[in-house]
Image (cartoon, rainbow, N blue to C red; front, side, top):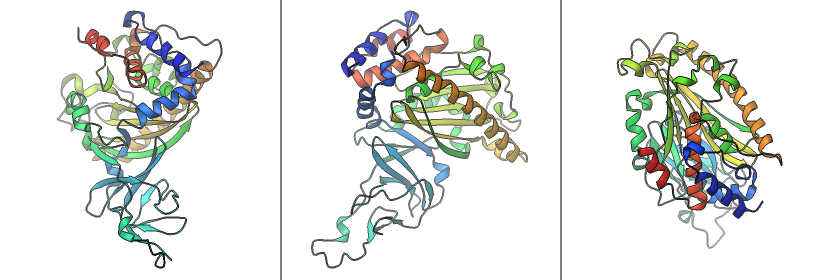
Length: 386
């Protein structure tokens, strides 16, 4: 199927009213040409989450990320400012740093050209006799970097509106949690054999919980109590109010911020395109997704506790129980989402109707259609406002 045919199928699906909505067509997930359009119109343009600022607490702390083909290093400089640079040497274009850690200087592993934490070239061995060479001419290109509620984002688009202007509405919705004070206790990276949108959609709906997660959180999920409001332009969300299976899923006794139902309400947020957050009164966890091909997705996976639970004498126990649970949940999700991608790749695959519990998937489809095809989302947003 050609790219134009995939786009036409997507636009046709997006034009359906929610009461008759279907999932996105298979080629939208399996086509490498469609992924190339997404990379160009979404990942090369949008704000993408790379982790929590608390993991970059000290000068020299850094992490790396590949964004739409551009290697990026995000670091804390000597003035304690978060910065991001191209992670490519200005000499023979080797990548500079890998993974995460702490460095006083950035040293190229190929010819030892050395850069400061401000991106300026500090040293270049055996270049003194090169007449046209001037060290001051070499500064690593800056990548836009902003912090929002403790998360660090980067974008390749110099004209992209700020995070504060884009995410102001969701910030007000979750202000009572004060997630900016939650402490990240683990951050990992994984690669799964599925399309990035399959994993995103899996996160944003709870319809699958009783089946896919029957051995973990499924038994605590009452689908009839799920609240799935219509989404907004930059995100979708739903709420779950319940007594959690883990103590950390409810508010700590010393938590005086949250009152009434908020003491046991969980927010599930999808910040477009690919930052997925579960926020509870006692803990949070998140994924940040980036495609590695139509059938593979790179995933940043992190989580931690609210300040009240971090101050509790049993904090280490709570962190361990959270990590154990989430590892089990991820294992279940990996199995489910990789099965979905295998099914999508079948010649007989057809998109079926969506449940009312999958409203976030409908909204996500409109976002994708708008970005890759210029689809007009106004009718859906107006319908949601009614």
